[in-house]
Length: 415
Image 1: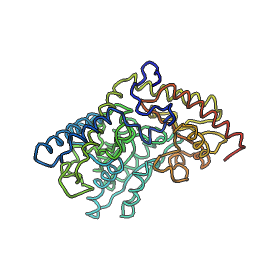
Image 2: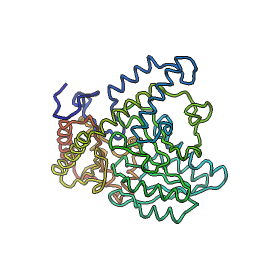
Image 3: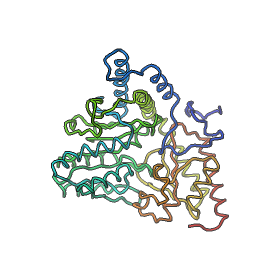
Image 4: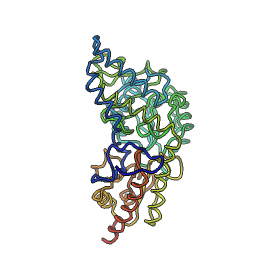
């Protein structure tokens, strides 16, 4: 294994300078930390009992399950581990949050408006279309050219709707640009929502492992997260349910009484154990200020060098608070899809928008909402780092981008 610079992580589950290339698509998913792999393997071998069983094998699995719940609660900054409901991932958590907020009003034919933003993930926007078809008005609040939510407009609309408001659902951080809601903005939105009896759901999928989290202080009712976004396994996530709204919770999956009768089905104990280990490691990382600064320094170097070597490139989501690991760059005079393919063929993994939308050839709705043209949106790529990213990888990535853009320019002007 190659030598690393001072302060850089020793763990390297997939050497990004081998034949597989350099991985800068961590907002889509992260490499699983070897310590997480070890925890999952141990749980598969030792904690095979059903946590609902009363014998010692079930008791052992149940103990691991509850210890894992504590670890995830600590990462999120929850008041109690009882506020954590394990799910299959962020999408299920989001669906459960929407179901909790809207199902009761639906059964009473009471309806109510849902407020969201124009730049939410498809895991929020698509199920909201289903709720709209069931009679719930869904309103989207716009963003400015930096992708910042018009919080004043949102708060004003909350006041105008009053008791007709059922739910506010927003992302904590945008997966494409890294643009963040501040703690103060979240607190103000939560307070305004509660003043009218509405629930506030936060899509927190992109934030754990990147920022210190104190969700209990923010007044959020429901928050979704997913293990594979911070070096944990795929197929496992959680929904934070604030104790004060536990009585309003509505299970999406019913049947057995697992998860305190909040999510039926035998729990994925090995995945949850891996989730917990990833949560512990993520918490260690975010509590280390120097480790967080190292990631931001690498991201800033990536942006600065690409802007210097490829004149006309623009950074999206700046100025303003962003995730330290995320760079959204719009390139001049090249076809974005060809640039993405060229970089991939050279071993550099980046993306054009959300991974789950990558098979669609439509421009990013996030970038269009920010005022970019279709052509500009199609020339925009996302580079997302992790705590495993090294300075050597950034240097090679910058050189690869410069070379790929120059190669494409020789083909002549593109859209």
